[in-house]
Image (cartoon, rainbow, N blue to C red; front, side, top):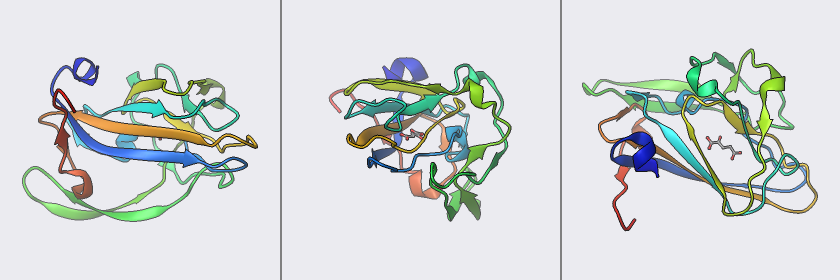
Length: 178
Ligand SMILES: O=C(O)CCC(=O)C(=O)O
């Protein structure tokens, strides 16, 4: 499916397991994945699958429909730490010509979003969502008292795409049988 969606050979950039504890496990503030993984040409996309039932109550995935056609938003540090993790970190970067530099990154929250636009998805266990790196996505805290919210996300680029962050430059090809 990723090969079809990317219209080419997919390379895995990273995988993330996101287990959100009941009664307050925080989410990822609404962002576009390009904020975290700059790449050129921008072919980045995500496949987000869940290992538990997920919904608005337990901090399921939120998206803004149609946002993949919008430009990259300006961002700020997340404004509510009861809902969203907040961090700052330096990343080593390298361009295709071999130039290297350090870039300071922080957790992103898109600036100027109309909160009415947020859609809270209900995704049952073993279900999944594909979205592009320009789609505004994220999640809120797990406010439920029982189920953990378990998600596994894989980020892909099309072969030939340059990923600037050095820690994720060694992408892995998806081959049949993987
Ligand atoms: O699972 C989440 O809470 C957020 C997912 C996310 O930010 C991503 O896959 O880029």
